[in-house]
Image: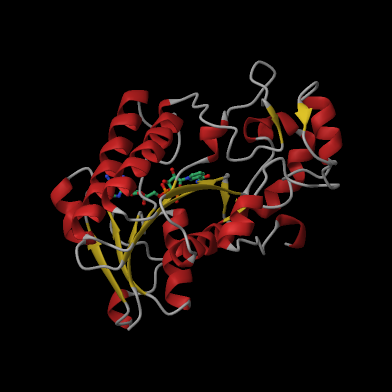
Length: 286
Ligand SMILES: NC(=O)c1ccc[n+]([C@@H]2O[C@H](COP(=O)([O-])OP(=O)(O)OC[C@H]3O[C@@H](n4cnc5c(N)ncnc54)[C@H](O)[C@@H]3O)[C@@H](O)[C@H]2O)c1
């Protein structure tokens, strides 16, 4: 029997890729979102392994309804950035969505929750007045929220830790870097002329297809308790070298190991070792 996975935020950028990746790998998917299914999803009536339910996860009843009966949850639904809504709304909506999904997962007794945390928990936005403590950024460069969005992710990770301890369910938090659709790679060479535009997240990114595979690996890996993982590509978005970026934008910041020519300022070592994560798509190949 293929495993049934509830994918929340399934109409969104990452959610669509997660649904496609899970279907491709033989899972059954119950896709859910507060907005109707994206036209980019396979038509649900055309395949028996995909169903769609519209649900507002700020409502506990909706959350329990979509989660009861699945084997595991891939939770991507959220207000996905600061400055879309007011700071308080971002915090309150994301907290409600996360607590409802986590508690419903515990009540339903699912096997696993994999969910989208964020690179913002590591201290973004970086700039001259907000330098990293050290480089490369790893899971221990935490917690450093600077917005109610990143605070909602830090609180989510804290909730996950406790709900996991109460329920025994493993919770896998994926601290995604900026999720990029490959259709946007044409914009990348222009960053060289305006590096300040990518300073906020230390020039990182994650291809949406690799973000999706990290969710699947999070569902499959041997993990106990609540674990968090930085998920980023292995290179930066910039043409100039990583050493040149550090010299210009992060002067005086401790660099803890030697970095390759274009190596990312995010370390994904933990995800590589514990989840088997290996990014396969990058803008330099596009
Ligand atoms: N996009 C990025 O660069 C990025 C980076 C780090 C982390 N993340 C996280 O990854 C996840 C997915 O982000 P995305 O870029 O795909 O965003 P997105 O906005 O494309 O998708 C999020 C989806 O969540 C749904 N949603 C919002 N509120 C809901 C509610 N109350 N009930 C049900 N569904 C609701 C939205 O309708 C949307 O389809 C989010 O949790 C986001 O915080 C994104």
